[in-house]
Image (tube, rainbow, N blue to C red):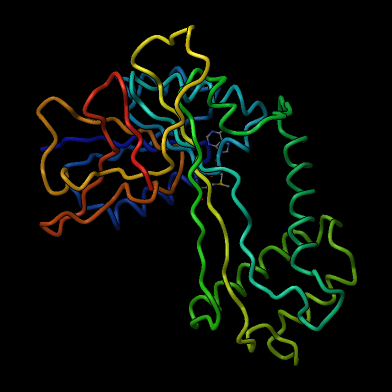
Length: 306
Ligand SMILES: C[S@@+](CC[C@H](N)C(=O)[O-])C[C@H]1O[C@@H](n2cnc3c(N)ncnc32)[C@H](O)[C@@H]1O
């Protein structure tokens, strides 16, 4: 019996194909049906609404909205897919992953910081070149608020792999740095002296090769901003909403392993190839389950704490 439904949407056919392969290989829970759809947000919002067929309980968009020229229009379109009590989660911002000590002994100290700064300048150029590009001179929670959601909040998770890294993490650091240096090289945003330092640091034949260092690390922060579509009309006499506690737990402990009530099939629209942390968990029976969090009372959806 199917209780839930995930509609995963993407603008790029290649990414959709990769997601389809991934789902075919990895998804085995018969209780949750996963559908894929090619959708360009916000242009195709009406057809996405038709595809959903009912308001969504959760819309999750990871690192996608910042590729849309008018980000506020995209957030407002996504919020418009929610039913009362539904939640929109935007995984955006956070802090870029860091790997290196400030002084690696080659070139000017602060090499990695300057790589992040170059990426930031590339990001500004990328955004300026998007069709219909508009600045959004405020934060993601404000965008959620302007889309009519309340309360809104942000939950950030620090992810750390301290040194010494195992072989897998060290390999990922090297691949990640090589990818970013290779991608930023033709932009002209990284100084020549820094590129020369990176080339040596990433060359296994060089005495300064990063792969030999025991002090590499992985440190990043992932932020998810989310807002709730209230089931009750806003009270104009209230001066502010109570901010919900930070956190995201898709299945509460009393729900684990149990079935949702009859008629409560969940609709989950995923503008992403990554599901929110905690949306898939192992039940007490050992089966994978995926259910967005659902409040006991549709009038006052609680957001669980971290
Ligand atoms: C940086 S990737 C993020 C991939 C993945 N969601 C993640 O979190 O790792 C941005 C993705 O958003 C998709 N995208 C960009 N603009 C879009 C739009 N207007 N509507 C739907 N998807 C879009 C891109 O095709 C790309 O796959």
